[in-house]
Amino acid sequence: MQYKIKKFRDGQVTATIVEEGSLQVYLRGNSYEDLFMAASIKEAWDAHHTLDKTVTATLTLYCLIGQRSDRRFHEKESFDLKVIARFINSMGFDQVALLHPHSAISLALIENAVQIDHFKYVQQTYIHIGSPVLVSPDAGAYKTTHTIAERLGADLIPSNKVRVDGKPVISIQGNVKDRECLIVDDMADGGRTFKYLAEALKQQGATKVFLYVTHAQFNYGFDELKESIDHIYCTNSYREIEDAYVTQYDVVKITL
Image (cartoon, rainbow, N blue to C red; front, side, top):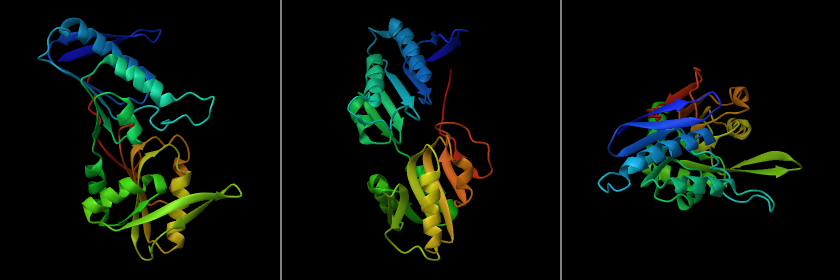
């Protein structure tokens, strides 16, 4: 099935179906505009396929907006992921595929959600570096990184960050002396936490420190990372990064 998108000068988006059949929509999903675009495409498709049960509609989102807002952080604050999930659910897709969601809450809130495994990108990174020790950046990432380490047959060292008098203190629970390290996480909004962790690893004798994140936003702190992290590996799920310091894996398949 094929469709085309038209954007008006006032920001309105309209979709037109140009070939009938099962629907597959691929979007970065990192903006509200993307979600409204998906809704427009699905509405146009529904108009012609409501009674045809032989066709299905699938939505793939590579970097779900709001996925870190997976709870109500303060009593009077909005639960943003819940709002986003409700909107996605209202579209009525038969399947919604998410690449490496921040937590299982996204999969629970979004109906018919499935996870796209990010393991192969970590595996490519691991092989390219030459079997480094994996490092989980905090307690929240430990379970996922532990699973990856088991699949790779790799060594894993946990780390954690606490604040003492407002300053971050990194604890590393293992020996990294004379070893190359690969920090593995799902997302990088900024880079300060990874910078502090890389500095701590090198202070304890790590020869090199690399970073893998699936969703490389780097809205701030990117240049600071170059002071302590030797190279970054990521996907282009959020945006394209033109920098020799970064190796990006192409995952985005978008047809508009």
